[in-house]
Image (cartoon, rainbow, N blue to C red; front, side):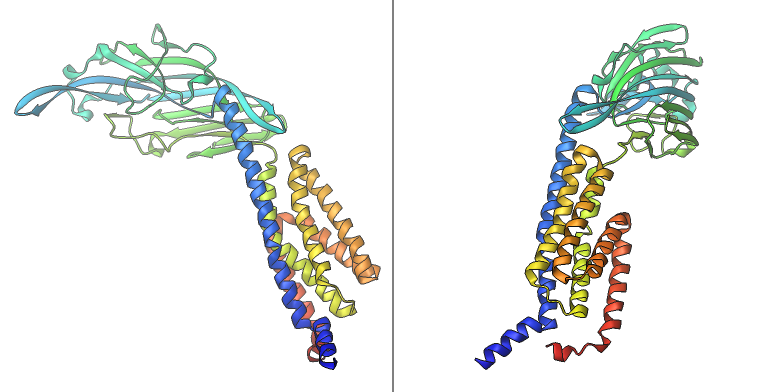
Length: 427
């Protein structure tokens, strides 16, 4: 009976055992934290599915390429000791390309989800210089000048709102759907042309197009200049080139790009599939002001550090005040902290991340503060817990550095105040 009492007292008073139990409880909290993380990712995938469904009907993100002038030419190969005439294509890019336009953003809703779409009217103009036959090492007599065609790359044709009328010198030509040769562009419109070998050719056209989230361009001119403006106040400039000039305000943005042919990895003219333009695009993304899933996911990544710090503070106050805290009470506090993240994502989908964070944080702080009053019996210790939780939640954007500094400070304080604690007596 005496040994049983000693064992019972050791279990009740052992700091080592209590630390082991707290560590196990903290690790167990990884299970609900990981479940909440999976929930956030699932909701994010649902949001992405909604974006895809709306984009499929309105128009996906657009990356405009062109125009590209393609000239068929004849060449001869030997097949089975016999000459055979083949056709390939010379692809010529404009000497200068000026693009200007405005993006008109709009928001589409489906249930609790919203998607940014846009309609844009873009003006293109420029000129093609005569083809440099010597550089291509092709005889002008081998080129089928009357079979030339112009191609404009548009990845999602559903977004086109109006006919594309191409002004070619003094002619007016209509763009037809489909690309004859997909060496450079795989989707878009094209039109047949008749080319005079030594003549410089001017062009202009307007594209009225719908899209979702982003609008990009390929720098196909020897000098490509793009001017965009919009009422959207949260642009993200992306791709291979950033704007030379940009202005962003609550009323919208304007941006100016100037890209030279020397800035990209393909020339002004080539034959066949010698070069690819993919990877050189640039433009703008219409960002949502707040991505609650990204911010919630970033917050929950540091849940275990947050929970561990809270448990250490509880344990530290327990040792100093000699108020015994049962493992079940640690478990309840850990679950309450996990509920914070679950509450955060469920509210953020309806009222936005910032307000959801405020409401969720205050709710959990008040809950744990009131619970600490009953556990520690003194207001000052409950206040310490409340201040700690408030500080950690307020500095969520600095969770990693705060967590490491917090662990360092708490460990230092424990080492400082535990100097006078006889750990063997506590055992």
